[in-house]
Amino acid sequence: MIDKRPYNTLGGADHGWLKAKHHFSFANYYDPAKMGWGSLRVWNDDEIKAQTGFPPHPHDNMEIITYVREGAITHEDSLGNKGRTEAGDVQVMSAGTGIRHSEYNLESETTKIFQIWVMPASRGEAPSWGAKPFPKGDRAGKFVTLATGFDEDGDALKIRSPARLLGATLLKDQSESYTPLATEPATTRHLYLVVAKGKVSVNGVELNERDGAAIKDEASLDIRALEDAEVVLLDAA
Picture 1: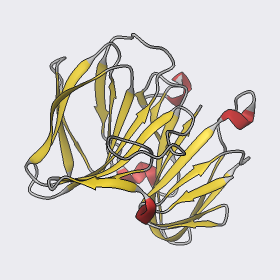
Picture 2: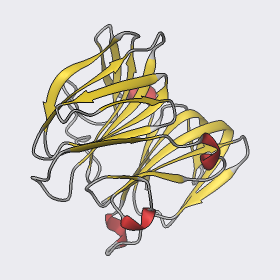
Picture 3: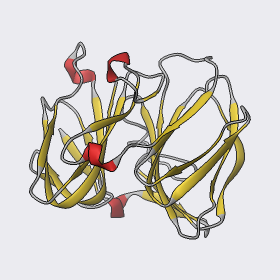
Picture 4: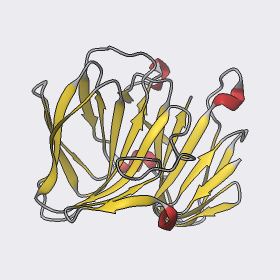
């Protein structure tokens, strides 16, 4: 099953400094049919104007992943962490028992991010934050694990959920395959794919830039670039 979610059908809001599209119910956008996908609760497509951003605010018991599409985001939190994450790179905040943080675009251009929230496997853990640059060449023509709840994924950023976030860049006519994580029963895996740039087909279903696809009960995925493309894929419980 591949349920295409075209960008122009997504809910959203325009706050002036922030233009947001919501793949799932969020804030004032509510759709009872789109409350999440497995343990995936939020996938927001945010555009943040230069020299603006999210002031300090709290979270708890959520794994929050930020994938920067364009520009950069500067993070600061109540644990004393500070960091700047730029295009193609990822930061992860495990909110745990509670954390306050701010996310500002201190650049001279608009920053574009995917904000992805995944429910943790257990509640009440200590909060944490981390960021990691991923050399773009490592993703050329193949998937690279960006954040993971599995030890076997090496030095990818850690999240506290049995999920994996991957990214890939593909040149036109290149293809890449992906086999969902093996669990029992296998049909419990929930995959969500978003095209960050370009245009692709996924098992024959065409997706344009910033479209999403909720995927379930597919033994494998064949992702083919119809033009130069960048894709982000979450494989969640």
